[in-house]
Length: 272
Image 1 (cartoon, one colour):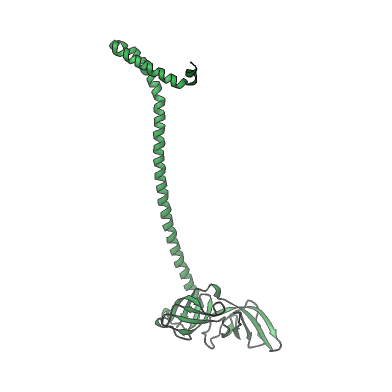
Image 2: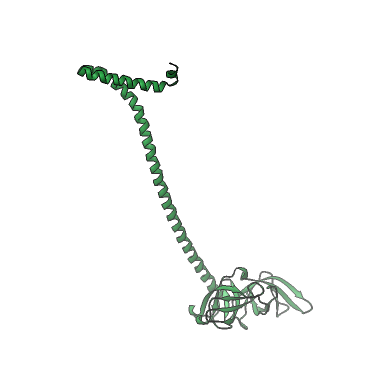
Protein backbone atom coordinates (compact mmCIF):
# COMPACT_ATOMS: atom_id res chain seq x y z
CA UNK A 1 0.00 0.00 0.00
CA UNK A 2 2.82 2.39 0.80
CA UNK A 3 4.37 1.77 -2.68
CA UNK A 4 1.04 2.51 -4.35
CA UNK A 5 0.71 5.83 -2.49
CA UNK A 6 4.19 6.87 -3.63
CA UNK A 7 3.59 5.83 -7.23
CA UNK A 8 -0.01 6.82 -7.82
CA UNK A 9 0.33 7.50 -11.57
CA UNK A 10 2.09 4.19 -12.27
CA UNK A 11 -0.45 2.33 -10.11
CA UNK A 12 -3.32 3.97 -11.98
CA UNK A 13 -1.89 3.05 -15.39
CA UNK A 14 -1.26 -0.54 -14.29
CA UNK A 15 -4.83 -0.76 -13.01
CA UNK A 16 -6.17 0.53 -16.33
CA UNK A 17 -4.11 -2.00 -18.28
CA UNK A 18 -5.22 -4.92 -16.06
CA UNK A 19 -8.88 -3.88 -16.23
CA UNK A 20 -8.63 -3.47 -20.01
CA UNK A 21 -7.25 -6.99 -20.35
CA UNK A 22 -10.06 -8.36 -18.18
CA UNK A 23 -12.65 -6.50 -20.27
CA UNK A 24 -11.10 -7.81 -23.46
CA UNK A 25 -11.25 -11.39 -22.20
CA UNK A 26 -14.82 -11.00 -20.94
CA UNK A 27 -15.88 -9.37 -24.23
CA UNK A 28 -14.51 -12.21 -26.27
CA UNK A 29 -16.19 -14.81 -24.04
CA UNK A 30 -19.56 -13.00 -23.95
CA UNK A 31 -19.68 -12.01 -27.60
CA UNK A 32 -21.97 -9.11 -28.39
CA UNK A 33 -23.32 -9.08 -24.90
CA UNK A 34 -20.23 -7.41 -23.59
CA UNK A 35 -20.60 -4.35 -25.77
CA UNK A 36 -21.76 -2.12 -22.96
CA UNK A 37 -18.81 -3.01 -20.77
CA UNK A 38 -16.45 -2.69 -23.70
CA UNK A 39 -17.80 0.74 -24.53
CA UNK A 40 -17.37 1.85 -20.93
CA UNK A 41 -13.73 0.85 -20.77
CA UNK A 42 -13.23 2.13 -24.29
CA UNK A 43 -14.22 5.57 -22.97
CA UNK A 44 -11.68 5.19 -20.20
CA UNK A 45 -9.01 4.26 -22.76
CA UNK A 46 -9.89 7.29 -24.87
CA UNK A 47 -9.63 9.57 -21.85
CA UNK A 48 -6.16 8.21 -21.10
CA UNK A 49 -5.06 8.25 -24.74
CA UNK A 50 -6.10 11.90 -25.39
CA UNK A 51 -3.45 13.61 -23.17
CA UNK A 52 -0.84 11.18 -24.45
CA UNK A 53 -1.72 12.25 -28.00
CA UNK A 54 -1.33 15.90 -27.02
CA UNK A 55 2.11 15.16 -25.61
CA UNK A 56 3.21 13.38 -28.78
CA UNK A 57 1.74 16.21 -30.86
CA UNK A 58 3.70 18.75 -28.85
CA UNK A 59 6.89 16.80 -29.44
CA UNK A 60 6.13 16.73 -33.17
CA UNK A 61 5.56 20.48 -33.21
CA UNK A 62 8.87 21.05 -31.43
CA UNK A 63 10.72 18.91 -33.97
CA UNK A 64 9.04 20.85 -36.78
CA UNK A 65 10.05 24.10 -35.07
CA UNK A 66 13.69 22.96 -34.97
CA UNK A 67 13.73 22.41 -38.74
CA UNK A 68 11.99 25.76 -39.28
CA UNK A 69 14.70 27.45 -37.18
CA UNK A 70 17.37 25.89 -39.42
CA UNK A 71 15.57 27.26 -42.48
CA UNK A 72 15.52 30.72 -40.90
CA UNK A 73 19.25 30.48 -40.19
CA UNK A 74 19.94 29.60 -43.82
CA UNK A 75 17.82 32.54 -45.00
CA UNK A 76 19.67 34.88 -42.63
CA UNK A 77 23.00 33.66 -44.01
CA UNK A 78 21.83 34.31 -47.57
CA UNK A 79 20.70 37.81 -46.58
CA UNK A 80 24.09 38.47 -44.96
CA UNK A 81 25.89 37.41 -48.15
CA UNK A 82 23.64 39.61 -50.30
CA UNK A 83 24.19 42.51 -47.88
CA UNK A 84 27.96 42.08 -48.17
CA UNK A 85 27.74 42.15 -51.98
CA UNK A 86 25.72 45.37 -51.79
CA UNK A 87 28.32 46.90 -49.46
CA UNK A 88 31.06 46.05 -51.96
CA UNK A 89 29.05 47.64 -54.77
CA UNK A 90 28.53 50.79 -52.66
CA UNK A 91 32.28 50.91 -51.94
CA UNK A 92 33.05 50.71 -55.67
CA UNK A 93 30.61 53.51 -56.40
CA UNK A 94 32.12 55.62 -53.60
CA UNK A 95 35.61 55.13 -55.03
CA UNK A 96 34.36 56.21 -58.45
CA UNK A 97 32.75 59.30 -56.90
CA UNK A 98 35.98 60.16 -55.08
CA UNK A 99 38.00 59.82 -58.28
CA UNK A 100 35.51 62.11 -60.04
CA UNK A 101 35.90 64.66 -57.25
CA UNK A 102 39.69 64.53 -57.60
CA UNK A 103 39.35 65.27 -61.31
CA UNK A 104 37.03 68.20 -60.57
CA UNK A 105 39.49 69.60 -58.04
CA UNK A 106 42.32 69.12 -60.53
CA UNK A 107 40.41 71.07 -63.18
CA UNK A 108 40.12 74.00 -60.76
CA UNK A 109 43.88 74.03 -60.27
CA UNK A 110 44.60 74.09 -64.01
CA UNK A 111 43.27 77.61 -64.55
CA UNK A 112 45.93 78.78 -66.99
CA UNK A 113 46.33 78.51 -70.80
CA UNK A 114 49.05 75.87 -70.95
CA UNK A 115 46.70 72.89 -71.26
CA UNK A 116 45.10 72.01 -74.59
CA UNK A 117 43.43 68.71 -73.64
CA UNK A 118 43.49 65.62 -71.46
CA UNK A 119 46.48 64.20 -73.38
CA UNK A 120 48.64 66.89 -71.74
CA UNK A 121 48.24 65.38 -68.27
CA UNK A 122 49.55 62.07 -66.93
CA UNK A 123 48.33 60.74 -63.57
CA UNK A 124 50.62 58.67 -61.38
CA UNK A 125 50.96 57.13 -57.92
CA UNK A 126 53.67 57.97 -55.39
CA UNK A 127 55.63 54.74 -54.87
CA UNK A 128 58.63 55.77 -52.72
CA UNK A 129 60.19 58.66 -50.79
CA UNK A 130 63.87 59.43 -51.46
CA UNK A 131 64.60 62.64 -49.55
CA UNK A 132 66.02 62.92 -46.07
CA UNK A 133 62.96 64.97 -45.13
CA UNK A 134 59.45 63.63 -45.67
CA UNK A 135 58.40 63.92 -49.34
CA UNK A 136 61.12 66.41 -50.32
CA UNK A 137 62.01 64.07 -53.17
CA UNK A 138 59.85 61.11 -54.17
CA UNK A 139 59.32 58.65 -57.03
CA UNK A 140 56.19 58.11 -59.13
CA UNK A 141 55.20 55.11 -61.27
CA UNK A 142 55.12 56.88 -64.66
CA UNK A 143 58.03 57.88 -66.90
CA UNK A 144 59.28 58.46 -70.42
CA UNK A 145 56.95 55.86 -71.93
CA UNK A 146 54.09 58.09 -70.72
CA UNK A 147 55.64 61.19 -72.27
CA UNK A 148 57.10 62.57 -69.03
CA UNK A 149 60.36 64.50 -69.29
CA UNK A 150 62.70 66.38 -66.97
CA UNK A 151 61.35 69.75 -65.87
CA UNK A 152 57.64 68.87 -66.21
CA UNK A 153 55.39 70.40 -63.56
CA UNK A 154 53.75 68.14 -60.96
CA UNK A 155 50.44 69.04 -59.28
CA UNK A 156 47.58 67.45 -57.36
CA UNK A 157 44.00 68.44 -56.66
CA UNK A 158 45.10 70.81 -53.88
CA UNK A 159 47.78 72.72 -55.77
CA UNK A 160 51.45 72.79 -56.71
CA UNK A 161 53.57 69.74 -55.80
CA UNK A 162 56.90 70.27 -57.60
CA UNK A 163 58.76 69.35 -60.79
CA UNK A 164 60.30 66.30 -62.45
CA UNK A 165 64.06 66.03 -61.79
CA UNK A 166 64.90 62.75 -63.55
CA UNK A 167 63.07 60.20 -65.67
CA UNK A 168 63.23 56.47 -66.40
CA UNK A 169 61.11 54.35 -68.72
CA UNK A 170 58.33 53.73 -66.19
CA UNK A 171 59.34 55.97 -63.27
CA UNK A 172 60.26 59.56 -62.50
CA UNK A 173 61.65 61.47 -59.53
CA UNK A 174 59.92 64.60 -58.25
CA UNK A 175 61.51 67.48 -56.35
CA UNK A 176 58.72 68.99 -54.27
CA UNK A 177 58.28 72.67 -53.43
CA UNK A 178 59.17 71.91 -49.80
CA UNK A 179 62.70 70.88 -50.80
CA UNK A 180 65.22 73.54 -49.75
CA UNK A 181 66.47 73.89 -53.34
CA UNK A 182 63.05 75.14 -54.51
CA UNK A 183 62.41 78.82 -55.22
CA UNK A 184 59.13 79.98 -56.72
CA UNK A 185 57.89 83.34 -57.90
CA UNK A 186 54.37 84.02 -56.63
CA UNK A 187 51.55 86.54 -56.75
CA UNK A 188 48.90 87.32 -54.16
CA UNK A 189 45.58 86.03 -55.45
CA UNK A 190 43.60 89.05 -54.23
CA UNK A 191 46.03 91.57 -55.77
CA UNK A 192 48.07 90.24 -58.70
CA UNK A 193 50.33 93.31 -58.60
CA UNK A 194 51.90 92.01 -55.39
CA UNK A 195 54.82 89.72 -56.26
CA UNK A 196 57.19 87.75 -54.06
CA UNK A 197 59.53 84.78 -53.82
CA UNK A 198 58.78 81.65 -51.77
CA UNK A 199 61.43 79.14 -50.73
CA UNK A 200 61.74 76.19 -48.37
CA UNK A 201 63.92 75.64 -45.34
CA UNK A 202 65.79 72.48 -44.37
CA UNK A 203 62.84 71.37 -42.23
CA UNK A 204 60.37 71.65 -45.11
CA UNK A 205 58.71 74.88 -43.96
CA UNK A 206 57.79 77.47 -46.61
CA UNK A 207 58.66 81.13 -46.21
CA UNK A 208 59.33 84.05 -48.51
CA UNK A 209 59.47 87.77 -49.01
CA UNK A 210 57.69 90.46 -50.98
CA UNK A 211 59.61 92.29 -53.73
CA UNK A 212 57.84 95.49 -52.71
CA UNK A 213 58.59 96.23 -49.06
CA UNK A 214 55.43 98.35 -48.90
CA UNK A 215 53.17 95.56 -50.18
CA UNK A 216 50.02 95.19 -48.12
CA UNK A 217 49.58 91.50 -47.43
CA UNK A 218 47.75 89.81 -44.57
CA UNK A 219 47.48 86.45 -42.88
CA UNK A 220 45.14 84.20 -44.83
CA UNK A 221 46.00 85.69 -48.26
CA UNK A 222 46.17 83.00 -50.95
CA UNK A 223 49.29 82.89 -53.13
CA UNK A 224 49.59 81.42 -56.64
CA UNK A 225 52.38 80.88 -59.17
CA UNK A 226 53.19 84.06 -61.07
CA UNK A 227 54.09 82.41 -64.38
CA UNK A 228 57.68 83.63 -64.23
CA UNK A 229 60.22 80.83 -64.20
CA UNK A 230 59.56 77.07 -64.09
CA UNK A 231 55.89 77.03 -63.18
CA UNK A 232 52.89 78.22 -65.25
CA UNK A 233 50.74 81.00 -63.81
CA UNK A 234 47.72 80.47 -61.59
CA UNK A 235 48.55 77.28 -59.68
CA UNK A 236 47.76 77.44 -55.96
CA UNK A 237 50.83 77.35 -53.70
CA UNK A 238 49.29 77.99 -50.28
CA UNK A 239 48.28 80.68 -47.79
CA UNK A 240 50.19 83.32 -45.86
CA UNK A 241 50.19 82.46 -42.15
CA UNK A 242 52.43 85.25 -40.80
CA UNK A 243 53.68 88.64 -41.96
CA UNK A 244 56.69 90.41 -40.45
CA UNK A 245 59.02 93.21 -41.53
CA UNK A 246 62.77 92.53 -41.62
CA UNK A 247 64.33 95.92 -40.87
CA UNK A 248 67.88 94.67 -41.54
CA UNK A 249 67.09 93.45 -45.05
CA UNK A 250 64.33 96.04 -45.47
CA UNK A 251 62.01 93.31 -46.69
CA UNK A 252 58.56 92.21 -45.76
CA UNK A 253 58.80 88.50 -44.95
CA UNK A 254 55.97 85.98 -44.92
CA UNK A 255 55.46 82.46 -43.59
CA UNK A 256 53.43 80.21 -45.90
CA UNK A 257 51.47 77.00 -45.39
CA UNK A 258 51.39 74.79 -48.48
CA UNK A 259 47.95 73.89 -49.78
CA UNK A 260 49.23 70.34 -50.39
CA UNK A 261 49.38 67.88 -47.49
CA UNK A 262 52.65 66.16 -48.38
CA UNK A 263 52.32 63.74 -45.45
CA UNK A 264 49.32 62.06 -47.09
CA UNK A 265 50.12 62.62 -50.78
CA UNK A 266 49.42 59.48 -52.81
CA UNK A 267 48.41 60.60 -56.31
CA UNK A 268 49.81 63.33 -58.53
CA UNK A 269 49.42 64.58 -62.10
CA UNK A 270 52.22 65.62 -64.41
CA UNK A 271 51.72 68.45 -66.91
CA UNK A 272 53.51 67.48 -70.13
